[in-house]
Image (tube, rainbow, N blue to C red):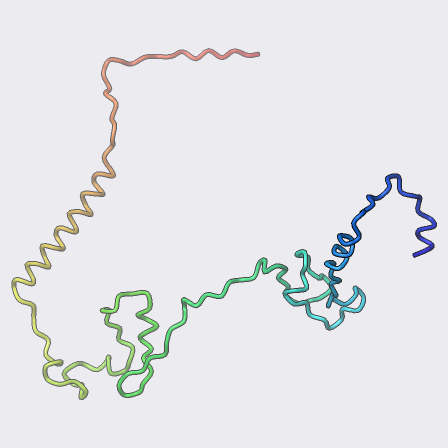
Length: 184
């Protein structure tokens, strides 16, 4: 260091002189030396940078591992796609929860072999569950009316979208414009 100070010229401006020695001691005592855990450039073989090693955001190109300085580019973990494992009364895993995901709870999903067996031949159902009653005339009429109204609403919106909004009147108010090309 002495050789370097001998080569450098003297400063042009003189540094400020602090009269109060207590302030000077307090300023020097607050400086904390930071020790770096990062090995020098040529000695980083086998070293893996951690999240605290990226100080100002730069990465280490000589370390061939995935690096995310300051967390940039790292994908956030999402916990919304996990399903709880559910079992039925017999202890069998219910895989229909996967098919029901994202739909209403009333949706009937047939995911087991017993769902393929016709109701008349199933042993696990009682007689009340095996019977399938036809809907009454009132239920049929109500469903038909709801369907008719829904279809009318769809058709009316399509018709209104196809009709032009503002049609200009095509009367005798036509005007002709002659275009003259000027070469310049």
